[in-house]
Image (cartoon, rainbow, N blue to C red; front, side):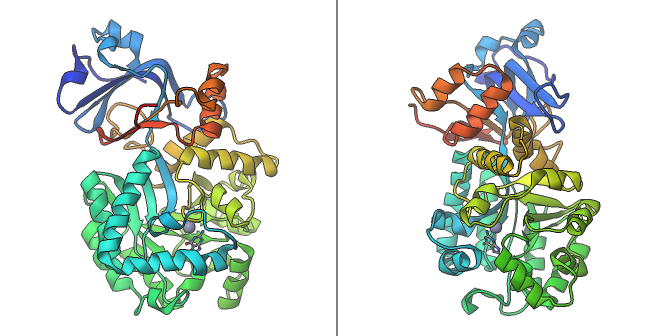
Length: 445
Ligand code: GUN
Ligand code: ZN
């Protein structure tokens, strides 16, 4: 991990941020801390200039090249990591997080759909989208794959607010024309509206479009066919949906598509399974379905807090890996119970324990950074701290006098340190930088 040429007092120049502290990111999926893909600088320098990472190197090396690490802001009690990436989150559900008392289909009717109906009001939608993006920043999430609502105007508001903040974001209007309250359904098939949104937003600034059928049972066959045609017409866009989350949903899918061999087969029939496809959950899949997802290069977004909260089931990470399926990780707020990707990884660790797998903390943190970036084809841009990358950076620092601070004093290795941040660090984000600009700074204390 090297790069960049030192200047005398980098932090003083406009458009420049210079930090010094422990730095951790990944260039490949690690099995443990000895793996080649672990880029760890116990005392490193990170310099961002004009939105990009200019220098990421050991403080000693920086000094040898004529730089002055003491001129950088001293964060040696912290951990500097890449901005976290959330691979599946519902913007309109932010305020129904932690709503009590039911499992998937009932939870949608009681909590999610009413919150989404309110996005028919563009003013409400705009203010919620701004709050949502600020909430992500406060949790160290600098990129996300986001579901909006069925409303095109609300989706415009989401993209617009993301563009103003210069966030790297993929999102889409939800397609649903036969499920949920009538007022929340597409009146036609929503395909022309989606095409217009793609034309308006895909590839603009740091934004990308994801064609977003809610889930198979919410869409007519014509609508799913239209979604597949959009993927053919606009090759760079993503496909983002739910898959095999809950047994009730599986039963409804089998009833709605009696001719399909299985759930993945429904999406395959309409051309929705490929390397640009992200399927949230993917818990209840056969070997054949997993094998086909793997062969297609599709990604499963593991949503552990949501899966525990709704009682949906335990994703078997080892089985997903054996099938060669790409794995991402996501909060799935509002069914997910935290905006924090660190807390989500902690829940992922617990789920792995219950399926007799051990999710190494470095593998978990890789998944929430470079792993999720790869799922979206954004590696080389974000997900890693290396010169030339976009400067999306997060600083983790324990609150003084916290359980985490005490635990970190005992940490005996990088693995131990990272594990403590995952298990105890849901509120450990102290700074977030997006494209080199500070977008969140925790109050002291
Ligand atoms: N399946 C279809 N819609 C949703 C949703 O909004 N949340 C979750 N968790 N699953 C879904
Ligand atoms: Zn979801």
